[in-house]
Length: 578
Image (cartoon, rainbow, N blue to C red):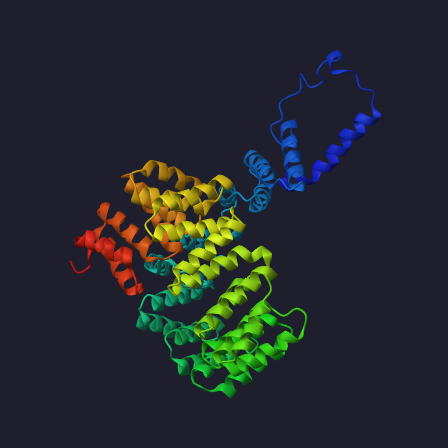
């Protein structure tokens, strides 16, 4: 029976069963023989078990138990080899908050429907989420080789923005270009993606040559001129960016991306009036878009032109639904102009939400920089009274500002006062634990972190902080690793926790097991400490050239790199110059 009929038959079958129960005189089971005892076995279509499983899955989905629904559909998809059912299983798994189940259903979907684009996209997205950009690109390339829309350029842009390890991705694209049919409609997507990666890895001449070749055959492609303009902006060549943007407008007059890039290039060239003319065109086309006004204002601010930014933002504060970011940006503009009290007024209007703490930080720091420390502290005290639900975060913010100015005694006093008022505040206990760590008082740190864990056994960051400290600085390695593993089960994609997992396995002597955790951590959050850990594990595994290359990259990437420097002091043979 076709899978789509399996699903539509469920309700009808159930209705028939109920009608039969209501209209027939039923003989007790104990008093009748099994009427199907001599019937042949059902080999195709729905039998009782299949019907029960599908109905269970359907009802589970209706009541929001998506995990059970997905598992039921998955089992039936395996039984009936049904693409429709595996697609339904993947949809339910997507809402199940179970990434392993989601990936399992997506992989099975790809096996049942190898030509379908959706499972390949899902698997690529899952790989990106866990920081495995190489696997994500492999999924996209497999889709491209089947003639699908792999959107390789978009993938590469995200990888660059997220700080992914680019050379392995570039190698995959080079291999793909060697075997792919250049006559395919989507071949240009791979060429543009490769050029972006080449430019991002310092191979600008090679990237430009690749784009020149594409220009000869696909000059009408908007994506070609978009890539040219983007690369020109990245290397600071505003004139080339303007030429590419204008050519893109000729090719695709209604594409707002070219107008935005043209405005940006005019700004870089100092042509403010020309830039404003372009932004006016965009605003005319998208008159109701607050997000566009905010983005354009940020563009002007990035190029240090506050007045055009202010003109873009002021219309947003006249209504009842002013975006919080508008108040923050107007506050920053007023602060830059020396209008301290006006800036304070804007910062205070940012409501609780995404930009709330940032605005209070800007306001307090502005007052402190203006030699008005009492006013800054009074402002934060009043804000704690106005926003009780944010009191702990505001107190933590003030403690950190006082620490930055060397006012340790005032910071200690404030922190202890706030903890007397809210003794079980996770945020304040965590802050005190970190300050104790910085002071070298590991016992005090452990007491506060353990208190957080006692109050909330699922506090992943406290589990990780305590576990990592025990692993790295004490001989209680196994005890610490148990805490880190608990944190990992709660937040398996957190880069800090991935780093702790990798470093913990290294400390236990299992570098093979440590490596993938550290690679994922560094891909998700390029950080000098993670770089040092990964380099040391690579060295221990005999991959000395890779370790030295990573250290060389860390030297170029991070101005301050205390953990990398400590590693080289301890193991000078790992220096790239050795």
